[in-house]
Image 1 (cartoon, rainbow, N blue to C red):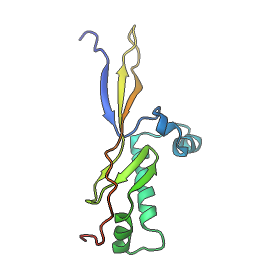
Image 2 (cartoon, rainbow, N blue to C red):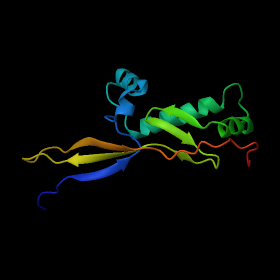
Image 3 (cartoon, rainbow, N blue to C red):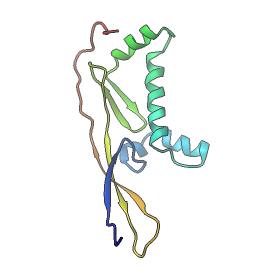
Image 4 (spheres, helix red, strand yellow):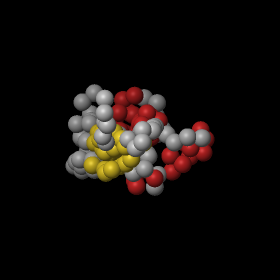
Length: 130
């Protein structure tokens, strides 16, 4: 097969990104479970954070959606999350490299850069489409 060379990939999470290292969630996760969180744990954390913010003082799904429709920016475990008026979410994209050591050994992943999220800071809708 020969030397595979370095490869790059994008992810919703990079534990070595500066904005992630400044967040309390990865350190707490490591303290509780003895390892760093992965992308699924980080996305789960951010999903629960958004759900908790939308469900404060209500269990009614319509009210939860209404409250969430007024959120615009939330600091998640993997950086800023922007919630757009059409219901979509924009968040950072992290570029990582897979490094293959010489002589052959286990590959390592190295954080390269963060592509910031697209922002849309307009007025929240007055009424949800649901």
